[in-house]
Length: 362
Image 1: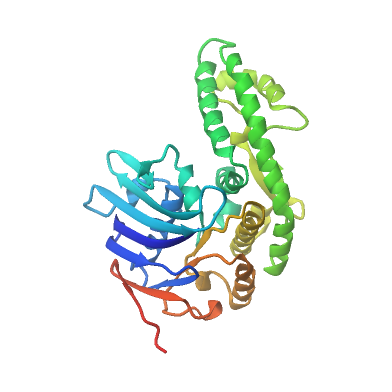
Image 2: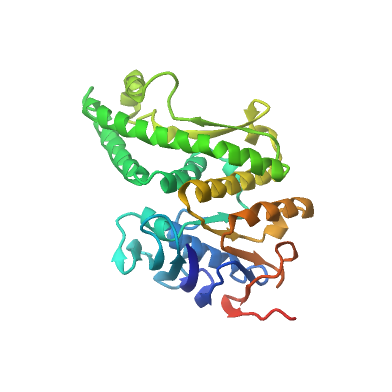
């Protein structure tokens, strides 16, 4: 699936913008603070229901306005049920929160957006995938699992509900949480198995891409959120005293992590910021290769000023790793050209929040 049309109203510095995008290489250029990255945020919002820069969507609303609106039209082929043309819209209100629609119908879960517009981003903060705690890596992994295992989103929603009910019961009488253990354990095992399967499938793509990017050698290991060799049911029972004391479920897939080790040590403890960034880029490209091969999903890839984030050698490696994906690229730059990526098929210029087509001089 690709993004064919984009309309943005009142998102950060952008009052209104309309873009007709090319299926292949698109370039958005302009000075710092002009609104380039804000347009990428709008595209990401369409496919994920949130920004890649902030967890608080209300911060995206233009100053002095009550709501923002992003509308897009996706087209192309995809996994079963996602082909053809789809209209996708997201509104964020200061008082009423976020609302999303696909083909004029309200979505029950923001995960539905990813089915009609799968989108991934590589931005200057991508090193946080390595540097920060497990929450970011779980979210990164789950997006891939969602596209590989169709039932995953349902399991995750039901699991979250069951854990919340168990936590509430833990704060009541002793033993009141036991009735929830069966559902938490059953759903948690399914979620963990699906994640582990994707991590195993990811391994060969990771090794190939990491080598191609001249990335530090690293091992990927899925930690499921409780200790081996116990089942989740056994782990819940073993953690009961601590859980009741604090009113929180301490074990389960909500505590899982993708452990990334270099020489037996956690990558975040031994790699420089630049090496972390390169490793995170390699992980993301490996993820996209996996999705293309396993689930026939080819996401749109957003690149926020890639030439500023990688040196010339690694940028060349990066371009060679992207080419086999055959995905729609939407890049930002300070200049109206991207030599490493070749001549863009369509160029847009952004200045003070205003967007227009730009004709590349011949």
